Length: 408
Image 1: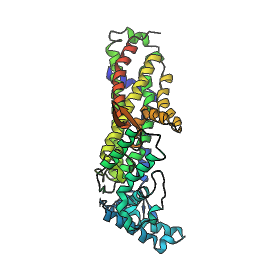
Image 2 (image 1 turned 30 degrees about the vertical axis):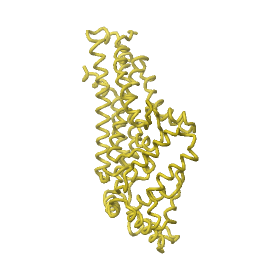
Image 3 (image 1 turned 90 degrees about the vertical axis):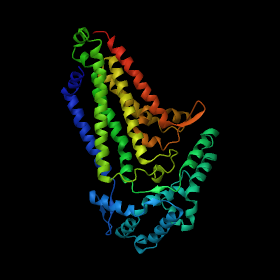
Image 4 (image 1 turned 180 degrees about the horizontal axis):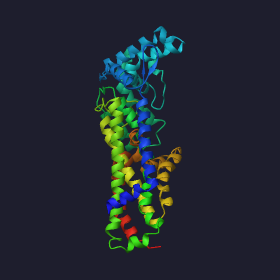
């Protein structure tokens, strides 16, 4: 019966089109992720492709290792040395590109200098150009100092004293010196993961919405519910088919995406903490890139299951695929429109919305904090548990609603 329900989904033209769209989505997203890594050669020409990735990896590997004060000082000195060249100071675009290429090896570490030596909310790309090697000793101390300054000034009314203490404690828990390594594969993987997951949920929404409403569309509901197991095993088969459909397509797509991106760009740097990248420098989640990968795709799976099971629940209750298919769009896009509202309570609510599960790489960079039983926690762990529990609770409700559905 489960096989029959799965077969009904892909026997329809809409089901085949959705599958083709998923394949196209995967190809496009992988293409964007891989093409995002380029290498500037000695002639000032940008190179792309596997050969370019290999060259960039080689020059960045030269700077891999613990980010000690000595290593930071070397980066500052190397940056100043390039700045003093004729090519860097030239107004000729080709020469400027050549000078840029000389900084590629330590470009990631240079970007950390931008954040470490500027104010907490400021971004000045040229800030490292004013540093001298002696400034290296303040590299790690600045991270916590800038956080404290921000919490005492601009953000003084955004957090409670307990939350402020929690953030400072998490910053101080980060082990130093950080270990740096080439990790562009992971960075590109996370950058485009939300795009893949969100559009995948929207496409799967069309399939899930039809699973419980197709009998009504074909005017076959009277036959379905009048059959021997129509209000028992047949309903269970639909739920199982929905679960297998979501799980199979999700993990097949994710594994292909991860395999292609990391296979081409490399999985180096998996054990580096996310604070070694520009997107993770301010994060209070002290996790590595591979741990972030588990969080991103486990969260995506939990979000996919919840949104699509809710879609099936609405489909079963309304008997309409049109009404049900709107749910993924509402849950994904409405919070985005409200995200521009600068109000602490609104931000806390939006931080717990199910769309956050599809963009966990952003969740670990946000300062969304919640107090539960006197304990301060970040949003990542909360939404994973909450929506996993809600999905489990939807299953018996879905079974009961469809089992007692009235024949038209």
